[in-house]
Figure (tube, rainbow, N blue to C red):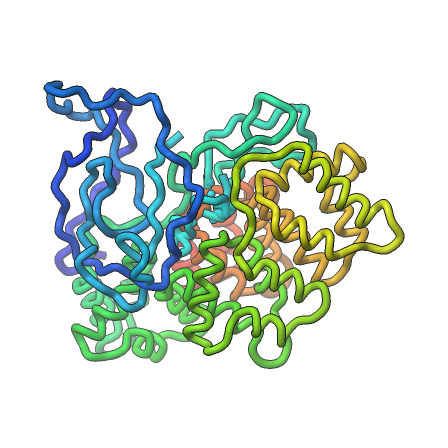
Length: 500
């Protein structure tokens, strides 16, 4: 379907091999429409710097030749153009209270310039990757924000998951080393070229006006806009029509399709804070939701969730966890909710061996289990360090860390500890498992399905799809198609992005 004022959009060009690095100031900033958004995640620390070795600009050299420069990779947010000289999207002169004004150029954190070679990144969740929307996060272990292009692990490092763009390992030695530079966008939802919020809300208004609702128009629009392009629609709609977009959509839609649409119109931090609040309110607690979010988000993302949670619910996230959980499980969640994990990339091998020995002594080697020792190491140490610890632990004990946790712990604490380990080892595989369990058997855990499909669509969905088909023998697209229906299915498949 065609929207008012929207010509057909050509596909993006693949990166072209080039000879010269981008020249600063090559293009003037382009005027833009989207205002900066609040509530998105701030830039992630520890992003990988550009690689040395490119030729510096030569004075008096010939002007750039057509095709010589590779196109700029997708940016984590709107705003002024990067120093490399790529054009700006021009949104830095606007303000949007719905987003974190402290973020550079928009609600999404900007990422370092990266070249295509996954990454919630290496893994979404790896330092240096914001989550789209939790994007840009994209999956650091984000996954947390994907990283690709890593060589396969060496035979000397047994039981290590096969590398994927989100969780790469580098070869060349028995011990795991730092992940390589994030090389490319691993999400399925990208910025729509030339999107105009005023034209977009006109499409949405027409879809809801009069008798009946044009769900197809809503699906096509929301399923082709990035988070930082969707959230400003709330303000643009109210500016144009004096009405609340959320209320209008809520009255026109129903069921899981309505829940999915509502989820797409929140910033990543707002969405996660809302999911955590829902998991703890009322009778009972959705412990799996608490574990999933807190074990997979980066330090910066967790700090932003804390800020938004307190702002919207008038109490701290820690207080909410304190009053709704208990025992060692509560201590695990509170530790994760600090967003204070070490993010250094360097690994001290002697300390890793010491930590592996401490974990062995706290569990397999004694009668009973010292849960506090597991908590202290798994929640505080850096991800590269912990991967080395897991390797040393298996070498020392003859059993992988997940098996030991299963033998030593039970219930929510076991689930929480295992989720932390799985996210550190391979974030996309963790989310693939969560999606599989949400859809297998009778019934579907729709809230889990919605949360993962929306929050990972701009982080590491391509890597999740790869892990899904590898581990479960069918594509994620096929499983969603067979397990859901109607408009709900159509929008979910937009976020899935294709079949494998």
